[in-house]
Amino acid sequence: MDERGSQGMEPQTDNNMITLLYHDVVERAGLMTTGFQGADADVYKLEPDAFESQLGSGPSSSASVLYTFDDAGVSALTRCADLLHKHRVTGLFFVPTAFIGEPGFCSRDDLRTLHERGHLIGSHSVTHPVPMSGLSDEDLTREWSESRRVLEEILNTSVTDASVPGGFTSARVESAAAAAGYARLFTSQPARRIRRRDGMTIHGRFSVTRGTPTIVVARVLKGSQLPWVKQAVLWEAKKIVKSVGGNVWLSFRKRYFKRMSRA
Image (cartoon, rainbow, N blue to C red; front, side, top):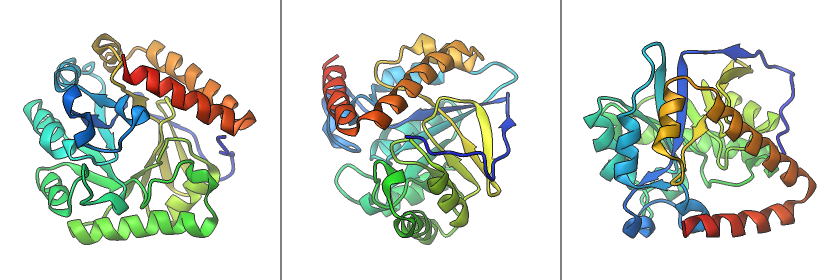
């Protein structure tokens, strides 16, 4: 359940920024080679041709686009970076630091290469806990502070961006991130309205899955609000289901993603 409150927040609106959420970009035959494994993760792994088509859609002249990528699977370097470079845009890659160098995930050298090529690197916590809001205050502090320390050590530069694992946030998650020194926190909430808590801005994102048609992404980039509204309706429904029955939700989620992975 989303536990956000109004205390410490000031709503902001940025009509010129469109923030998209991706994960891995890989051929269907290579789903097991990058990022987290399983049907729920595979749904977020796009074919390279589909991703490039979306990059080519282009935003409206008045909008800027931020391409963000969660999990830091190896496709961040082997696929995403090259396609972003081809279209002259940069990405923001969020890293769960406990997985650095593990099979299917970026190594320390990979992250340095991404950084040297002009891409931004941010924290995706240490252990990728879902839901993060279920952690104790002590664990929240460790997840945000330790991941930032590790990334700054690798990159030799300040890291001030972070994204919430699983996307669902709470007041405690946000306050802990602000206390750890982050300037921007990204969720999976499909909203363009930018909020503020404890001096840190909080950004929603439009999630792109393997089943998202390129035409829908093109509409988002051209400024249409309808795709955001449709995704927000589903998001709110999921919040209600999660709040009234955790085990029911987990069972439904498992069946849903298994079915989607076969599509």
